[in-house]
View 1 (spheres, rainbow, N blue to C red):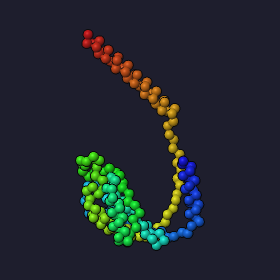
View 2: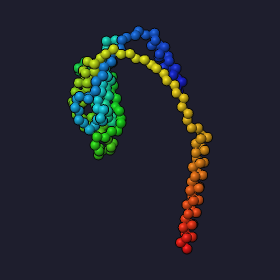
View 3: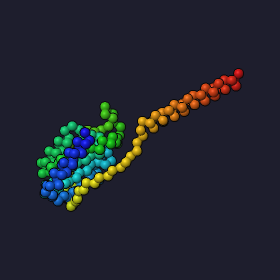
View 4: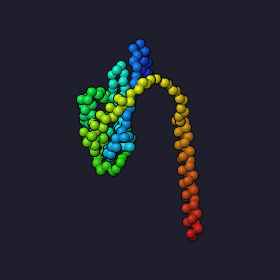
Length: 187
């Protein structure tokens, strides 16, 4: 399966090489200055990236949170769309950070469980505008790094297992011996 994916990726790259190239601009904004206080967000709060390709703008959102309330993404997409912004996706960090103990079946607060929908959509609209203002020319490169990693094989694991068994037998023998000696000294 890995070979099939590699072949498909190479085929796509070969096709892309022949396509027209467009300038790329990237902008980013985060919620650092928004003073958001919500226990369903981690310390990283929110962020959004704007990609401008061929004079079209696309946005990717991020939330430092444990998942997201069902339907919240669609509310954000709809709100931004009404203002002329095309949000591709929102990702969550799934860090399981807890600002306070959650007494629910999940053990944490998912994004949108404590934050109001209208607050969330206005936060993202604000960030989208800032990311758009921060656009600057950028470049994208694909680099490849190969690393050889030595891993333990079955022979090494077997040797560790035998050594651990031997250590346990020695420990058991020592315990039996010291217990016998202690009982002997009591008599």
